Amino acid sequence: MLVEDERIVALDLASTLEELGYTVAASVSTGEAAVKQALKLRPNLVLMDIRLAGKIDGIEAAEQIRKEIDIPVIYLTAHSDEPTLARAKNTGPLAYLVKPFKALELHCAIEIALHRQETELRQREARERQMQAEKIESVARLAGGIAQEFNNLLSIVSGYSELLETDLPANNGGMPRVAAIHTAVKTATQLTRQLVSLSRGQMLFPHAIDLKSILSETDRLVAPLLGSGIELTIAPIREPVWVRADPEELQQSIVAIISNAGDAMPEGGKITLQVGAAALSSKNSAKLPDLVPGKYATLSVTDTGSGMTEQVKARIFDPFYSTKKDGKGLGLAVVHGFVAQSGGTIVVETKPGAGTTFTIYLPRITQLETEAEAIHIGSSAPSLRGSENLLLVEDHPQLRALFQEFLDSLGYQVLAAGSGTEAVGLVKKFPSEIQVVVTNVVMPGMNGWHLARELKQTSPDIKVIYTTGYQDLAMEDSGDPFPDEVFLQKPLALGDLATTIRQMLDPPPGLPN
Image (cartoon, rainbow, N blue to C red; front, side):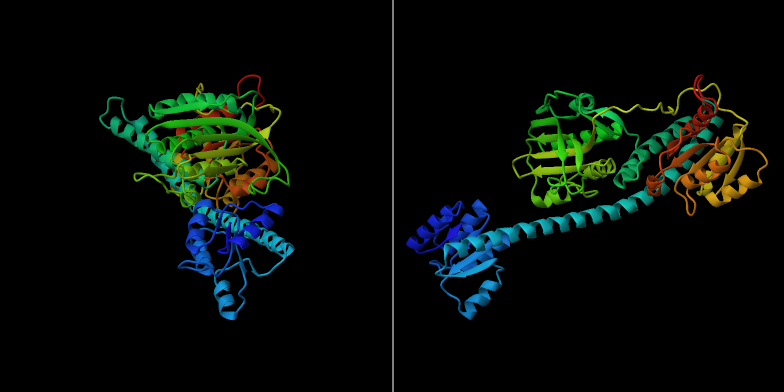
């Protein structure tokens, strides 16, 4: 945009700029008009004369513009006296050219100013991303710690209510109260899973997923939740697009984004789901700094709603932040945590009044890998009783006591320890062979993962059941579990624990023991 009150000079400058390859978005002659047009057109650069007709000069106009929007300014003036220079410096111009000047000088000043502006913008965006990442990481660590302890307490409540339920006759008046406890535990479990997802410490169970099939299922789940005035469309998918992710968590994430889009369209509108692919190289990955170069699948959710301001967009993934008066919960922060934990990222494009697009990027796989048959927790078993030797390692005293009481009642010979180090000492003194280890993962000192590795050095056939309410990040560098190791997520039902032990000790015919 050109601001010059001498018409002949303005026409000459406009002609020179066009010859240099620039587009003049507007040419105005007063400071007031400069402010109005700058805020309306938002040009990449303002060429500003200082002495202008009207109530405000070029320096005042530049100051008003920079207070509202970040647009670089180059002063073009015949005045270079000290007072004028001092005033001009306070507005942060990117160049100051004294008339008369040559076209080459103008061209160089413009290119340097635009480059500097772009560099500063990238640096500012990088700082903002870093601050956002640090903020989310701080909250995530807090959430992980809370979830770990809360899951232990829920396991205790759930476990003792199970024992109480077995002790009461079916027609006892206390049974409805026990059922109410189970219901409360399930509700609290969903909240802790959101906390764990936010902390990126959730135990995920990734599988090869065709996004086409998961979107079809999502359509069935979401349709009843949306208002009658909202149209949900899935763009045609020509070929399978495969990713490796936890299908349940991915589906919940898509539902959360769609639900958020529906809230942005109280009077109705359209939501479009679209699947695509992206290949990121080291050259074109600058806009997605959270991703490493490679092949990615994209899943976008676009709505025709009210859109968001930059201020709202900057906080959209903050925990407990909501644009709705009655908003509560962890919202899109949970989605962000899951996607990041799955090796991807999520990008938001929005403008007030122009709708919003959420795009999830997940690593794309081109060939389906053979999926090992997983133990299905909770399937029927002939008997939950046994007489084998079990090692129970749990640092929470009450939870350890609960598990030991339950396993003792089933007939097992139980060694109980409160730490990995204590467990190693007990095993060395125990005269018989241990068949199964039930160990918490996250413990002070030696964690459950390293305990199992040490025990397998002397007893390679020992079977391991890990219990955890929060994935130990140290495990990520420890390799994959062995086939005779499984994970159970806390809060843990006693029936699931007993069933899993028997399934590991009594595998179906045809499978190795």
